Structure formats: structure tokens, C-alpha cells
Length: 151
Ligand code: IDP
Ligand code: MG
Image 1: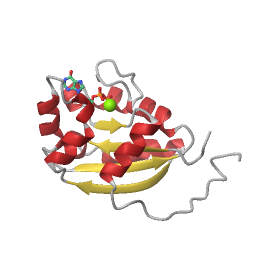
Image 2: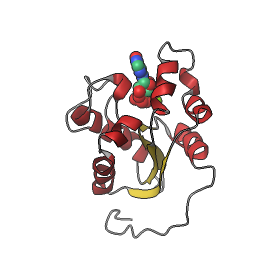
Image 3: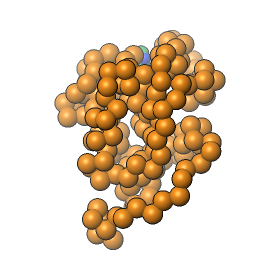
């Protein structure tokens, strides 16, 4: 399994407004994942619509897009072995009432329409989302990984 798998994690407007940015970053960092990119931004409506295009037929789609554009988000890219699947575990189940305690959604929210954080659901969707949110590309890096990975 590659040590440089990447996932797209976004702290949604409610997470930013509630002061949970540090908490989210802390949890991914302390697991051992590497913060590859980070920016705070207001989200253009077209970007929110494109990000959630697969859900465009859902009744909650319009409300979802309005939620994502309602205030600044923090968009991040994390790198490491199994980061997509394990990142989803750190994030927790979509509906926070069903998210396990210990996960971010399980610990910090209640409503599915205010669930604090986004995490890519597969390696392929992570690639699509990173391209969408970071069209400028990612900065060069050379992280020291010998304390995280045996090889
Ligand atoms: P995910 O964020 O866990 O991947 P998805 O099914 O991809 O969940 O849905 C994307 C986002 O759409 C959710 O995180 C949540 O904010 C919102 N959402 C999903 N289902 C509902 C719903 O039934 N009502 C309102 N919002 C929803
Ligand atoms: Mg999803």
C-alpha cells in the first residue's frame, strides 16, 4: 500500500465557525498523516455544485450547496498509507447520530446537514476533489517519514 495516498478533507462552514479547525487537524496529524495542503476560502457556488455533482438529484442538494457556501471552509489534503479509508473512519458516518464516539462527527455534531467535515470516499474521488479544490497544484515537499513507516 502506498505511503503517499492522498485524500481531500474539508472543514465545512459550521466546523470553521465553531472553532473546530485545530481539532480536525490535530486528529489527522496525531494519527501520523502528513498535511500536504491547506487553505481557507469562501466557496464559489459553482465549485460547491461541482463537488457534490453526484448528489444533484437528491432533495437536499440545494440546501447542501447553500450550506457549503454559507461561510469560509478550510480545504486540506492529507497524505499517507490508507488515508482515504482511515480518514473516513476519523471523520465518522455521514449521519452524526450514527457516527461512533471517537470520530470527528461522533464527537462534535448532531445533524446530517451540519456535520462539520467532508472526507473523500475513494482514491478516485479523492483525485477528482483534489484537482477541483487545488487547481493550482500542491507545493513540493519531502516529509521525514521514518518515524511513521517501517519502510
Ligand atoms: P459523506 O459526507 O459522509 O460522504 P454523502 O452521502 O456523500 O456523505 O453526502 C454529502 C453530504 O451531504 C453529507 O456530508 C451531508 O452534509 C449532506 N447530506 C447527506 N445526506 C443528507 C440528508 O439526508 N439531509 C441533509 N443533508 C444530507
Ligand atoms: Mg460523500
